[in-house]
Image (cartoon, rainbow, N blue to C red):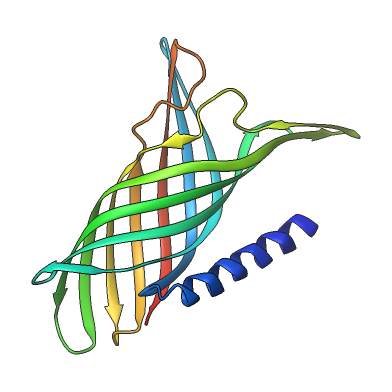
Length: 195
Protein backbone atom coordinates (compact mmCIF):
# COMPACT_ATOMS: atom_id res chain seq x y z
CA UNK A 1 0.00 0.00 0.00
CA UNK A 2 2.89 2.35 0.81
CA UNK A 3 4.45 1.77 -2.64
CA UNK A 4 1.11 2.39 -4.33
CA UNK A 5 0.60 5.69 -2.48
CA UNK A 6 4.17 6.72 -3.36
CA UNK A 7 3.46 5.98 -7.02
CA UNK A 8 0.29 8.11 -6.93
CA UNK A 9 2.22 11.01 -5.37
CA UNK A 10 5.00 10.75 -7.99
CA UNK A 11 2.48 10.71 -10.83
CA UNK A 12 0.58 13.67 -9.38
CA UNK A 13 3.86 15.61 -9.09
CA UNK A 14 4.71 14.83 -12.70
CA UNK A 15 1.23 15.89 -13.78
CA UNK A 16 1.64 19.25 -12.04
CA UNK A 17 5.18 19.55 -13.42
CA UNK A 18 3.96 19.06 -16.98
CA UNK A 19 1.45 21.89 -16.55
CA UNK A 20 4.12 24.27 -15.26
CA UNK A 21 6.36 23.38 -18.25
CA UNK A 22 3.60 24.62 -20.60
CA UNK A 23 3.07 21.17 -22.14
CA UNK A 24 0.46 21.41 -24.87
CA UNK A 25 -1.22 18.23 -23.62
CA UNK A 26 -1.05 16.18 -20.44
CA UNK A 27 -1.79 12.47 -20.79
CA UNK A 28 -2.44 9.49 -18.51
CA UNK A 29 -3.33 5.90 -19.26
CA UNK A 30 -2.86 2.16 -19.12
CA UNK A 31 0.00 0.25 -20.67
CA UNK A 32 0.81 -3.41 -21.29
CA UNK A 33 4.51 -4.24 -21.60
CA UNK A 34 5.84 -7.57 -22.90
CA UNK A 35 9.45 -8.81 -22.93
CA UNK A 36 9.77 -11.55 -25.61
CA UNK A 37 12.88 -13.71 -25.45
CA UNK A 38 14.22 -15.94 -28.24
CA UNK A 39 16.97 -18.39 -27.27
CA UNK A 40 17.87 -21.17 -29.76
CA UNK A 41 14.53 -22.84 -30.51
CA UNK A 42 12.83 -21.58 -27.35
CA UNK A 43 10.58 -18.53 -27.19
CA UNK A 44 8.99 -17.21 -24.03
CA UNK A 45 7.58 -13.93 -22.79
CA UNK A 46 7.05 -11.94 -19.61
CA UNK A 47 4.09 -9.56 -19.50
CA UNK A 48 3.20 -6.71 -17.19
CA UNK A 49 0.51 -4.10 -16.70
CA UNK A 50 1.04 -0.54 -15.66
CA UNK A 51 0.23 3.13 -15.94
CA UNK A 52 1.83 6.17 -17.52
CA UNK A 53 1.69 9.94 -17.16
CA UNK A 54 3.36 12.67 -19.17
CA UNK A 55 2.98 15.47 -21.66
CA UNK A 56 3.89 16.51 -25.18
CA UNK A 57 4.05 19.57 -27.38
CA UNK A 58 3.25 20.06 -31.09
CA UNK A 59 5.68 22.03 -33.26
CA UNK A 60 3.97 22.76 -36.58
CA UNK A 61 6.20 22.23 -39.64
CA UNK A 62 3.58 22.09 -42.44
CA UNK A 63 -0.21 22.19 -42.83
CA UNK A 64 -1.65 19.40 -40.64
CA UNK A 65 1.88 18.12 -39.86
CA UNK A 66 3.74 18.51 -36.55
CA UNK A 67 6.82 17.26 -34.76
CA UNK A 68 5.62 16.10 -31.34
CA UNK A 69 8.25 15.46 -28.65
CA UNK A 70 7.12 14.38 -25.20
CA UNK A 71 8.26 13.22 -21.78
CA UNK A 72 6.56 10.29 -20.02
CA UNK A 73 6.97 8.34 -16.82
CA UNK A 74 5.91 4.66 -16.98
CA UNK A 75 5.36 2.18 -14.16
CA UNK A 76 4.92 -1.56 -14.90
CA UNK A 77 4.27 -4.53 -12.62
CA UNK A 78 5.48 -7.79 -14.25
CA UNK A 79 4.59 -11.43 -13.63
CA UNK A 80 8.16 -12.78 -13.72
CA UNK A 81 7.58 -16.35 -12.48
CA UNK A 82 5.71 -18.23 -9.77
CA UNK A 83 5.66 -16.09 -6.61
CA UNK A 84 7.91 -13.55 -8.34
CA UNK A 85 6.96 -10.08 -9.51
CA UNK A 86 8.86 -7.16 -10.95
CA UNK A 87 8.15 -3.47 -10.29
CA UNK A 88 9.84 -1.23 -12.84
CA UNK A 89 9.98 2.51 -13.61
CA UNK A 90 10.87 3.89 -17.07
CA UNK A 91 11.51 7.33 -18.51
CA UNK A 92 10.19 7.58 -22.09
CA UNK A 93 10.86 10.42 -24.55
CA UNK A 94 8.93 10.00 -27.82
CA UNK A 95 9.86 12.14 -30.84
CA UNK A 96 7.07 11.56 -33.36
CA UNK A 97 5.71 13.05 -36.55
CA UNK A 98 2.01 13.83 -36.22
CA UNK A 99 -0.57 14.20 -38.98
CA UNK A 100 -3.99 15.64 -38.09
CA UNK A 101 -7.25 15.85 -40.00
CA UNK A 102 -10.19 17.91 -38.73
CA UNK A 103 -13.64 16.46 -39.53
CA UNK A 104 -15.58 19.25 -37.84
CA UNK A 105 -15.23 21.96 -35.20
CA UNK A 106 -15.46 19.32 -32.48
CA UNK A 107 -13.70 16.25 -33.90
CA UNK A 108 -10.09 15.97 -35.10
CA UNK A 109 -8.35 12.65 -35.81
CA UNK A 110 -4.58 12.25 -35.75
CA UNK A 111 -1.86 9.67 -36.19
CA UNK A 112 1.74 9.76 -35.01
CA UNK A 113 4.79 7.66 -35.84
CA UNK A 114 8.43 7.70 -34.87
CA UNK A 115 11.09 6.64 -32.38
CA UNK A 116 11.30 7.03 -28.64
CA UNK A 117 14.20 7.01 -26.21
CA UNK A 118 13.47 4.81 -23.19
CA UNK A 119 15.57 4.38 -20.06
CA UNK A 120 14.88 2.02 -17.17
CA UNK A 121 15.09 4.26 -14.12
CA UNK A 122 15.00 1.36 -11.69
CA UNK A 123 13.02 -1.50 -10.30
CA UNK A 124 13.14 -4.69 -8.28
CA UNK A 125 12.30 -8.34 -8.76
CA UNK A 126 10.70 -9.72 -5.60
CA UNK A 127 10.25 -13.42 -4.73
CA UNK A 128 7.80 -13.92 -1.87
CA UNK A 129 6.42 -17.28 -0.74
CA UNK A 130 5.72 -18.92 2.64
CA UNK A 131 7.55 -16.27 4.62
CA UNK A 132 10.60 -16.23 2.36
CA UNK A 133 11.27 -12.92 0.64
CA UNK A 134 14.14 -12.17 -1.73
CA UNK A 135 14.71 -8.93 -3.66
CA UNK A 136 17.15 -8.10 -6.46
CA UNK A 137 17.55 -5.49 -9.18
CA UNK A 138 15.17 -6.01 -12.10
CA UNK A 139 17.74 -5.06 -14.72
CA UNK A 140 20.78 -6.85 -13.26
CA UNK A 141 23.61 -6.68 -15.81
CA UNK A 142 21.21 -6.20 -18.71
CA UNK A 143 20.80 -2.94 -20.62
CA UNK A 144 18.39 -0.27 -19.43
CA UNK A 145 18.22 1.68 -22.69
CA UNK A 146 15.88 1.03 -25.62
CA UNK A 147 14.90 2.78 -28.85
CA UNK A 148 11.40 1.59 -29.79
CA UNK A 149 9.56 2.70 -32.91
CA UNK A 150 5.91 3.49 -32.31
CA UNK A 151 2.57 4.20 -33.95
CA UNK A 152 -0.34 6.01 -32.33
CA UNK A 153 -3.91 6.85 -33.37
CA UNK A 154 -6.14 9.28 -31.56
CA UNK A 155 -8.97 11.73 -31.63
CA UNK A 156 -9.36 15.22 -30.16
CA UNK A 157 -12.87 16.03 -28.99
CA UNK A 158 -14.04 19.61 -28.46
CA UNK A 159 -10.37 20.66 -28.87
CA UNK A 160 -9.54 20.00 -25.20
CA UNK A 161 -10.06 16.25 -24.76
CA UNK A 162 -8.00 13.47 -26.29
CA UNK A 163 -8.27 9.67 -26.55
CA UNK A 164 -5.25 7.72 -27.84
CA UNK A 165 -4.04 4.17 -28.48
CA UNK A 166 -0.57 3.17 -29.62
CA UNK A 167 2.03 0.45 -29.90
CA UNK A 168 5.83 0.58 -29.56
CA UNK A 169 8.17 -2.04 -31.07
CA UNK A 170 11.45 -2.35 -29.16
CA UNK A 171 14.61 -2.49 -31.29
CA UNK A 172 17.45 -2.89 -28.76
CA UNK A 173 18.26 -6.32 -27.35
CA UNK A 174 17.47 -6.23 -23.63
CA UNK A 175 19.20 -9.52 -22.77
CA UNK A 176 22.55 -9.68 -21.00
CA UNK A 177 23.17 -13.10 -22.62
CA UNK A 178 24.85 -13.12 -26.05
CA UNK A 179 22.97 -16.22 -27.19
CA UNK A 180 19.54 -14.72 -26.41
CA UNK A 181 17.54 -11.91 -27.97
CA UNK A 182 14.97 -10.11 -25.83
CA UNK A 183 12.80 -7.26 -27.12
CA UNK A 184 10.24 -5.17 -25.27
CA UNK A 185 6.97 -4.18 -26.96
CA UNK A 186 4.38 -1.90 -25.35
CA UNK A 187 0.67 -1.26 -25.95
CA UNK A 188 -0.81 1.91 -24.43
CA UNK A 189 -4.31 3.34 -24.20
CA UNK A 190 -5.01 6.67 -22.58
CA UNK A 191 -6.72 10.00 -22.35
CA UNK A 192 -5.39 13.52 -22.38
CA UNK A 193 -6.20 17.17 -21.95
CA UNK A 194 -5.09 19.76 -24.53
CA UNK A 195 -4.34 23.25 -23.26
